[in-house]
Figure 1 (cartoon, rainbow, N blue to C red):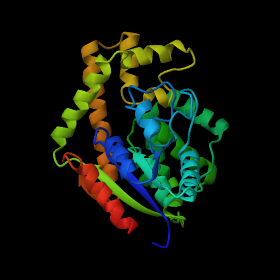
Figure 2 (figure 1 turned 180 degrees about the vertical axis):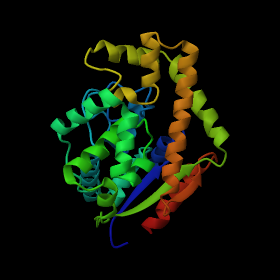
Figure 3 (figure 1 turned 45 degrees about the vertical axis):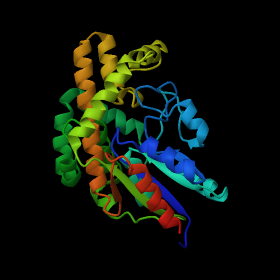
Length: 312
């Protein structure tokens, strides 16, 4: 290869990405870069299925525990950090393994980011007032007039993205969809092998998800203990990106007394399955990925063989 190799190990939640990466790193000199928007937060270990201290001691891990739950971390920051880390890992003569399920991060790394304007707090406050007065559905309809392509792509309840799309139209005078269409893919200093761990039987993945969520609830300490400790900090609230993570949002509702323990479990499992569905939808759009059935016993060995072949 004319460029050094980086490997993406992608897949939906509960597909065995961490286990596969650790197996690969046990054979090849590698370092793991987490591609997960939840693993960045300190104190959020159980509900995110964060690699254990023992697992992290066997191979260097990056972009884990780099933010407090009340702090922000943008897609652009991830991309900058990941590119910097990939270069450093190559300089150490090792293989970068990018492992996770935040598909937006993978897409930003591979395809680059647009040159959309940064947030304008004054304009955002005005849009917030409009949402308060008329509701998000009305703003979504207004966006449909100004940027129908983006409006069709967004759910009418997706407040954050509708707000951002409207902000861009008002700041630039152009719809976000038109600006994104002009974006050019970046010229990266590495080549990427994209391996996707995907289930041949989605019902088996759903069972894995259910079992893992039950284990998080029954562990000592468990998910509820973790969220109780997070709430005790006093600087967190359900609107933060960290507390909107799957499992944490439902546990917060339970501790608020708005749902029962049974409802917590059912809503948590359902939300995780929906997350997996969205991740698989993202993966299908990545046409150059190599798919391995995550349900077979030798999935990690298959991934290792692909990497060894690519390395020559």
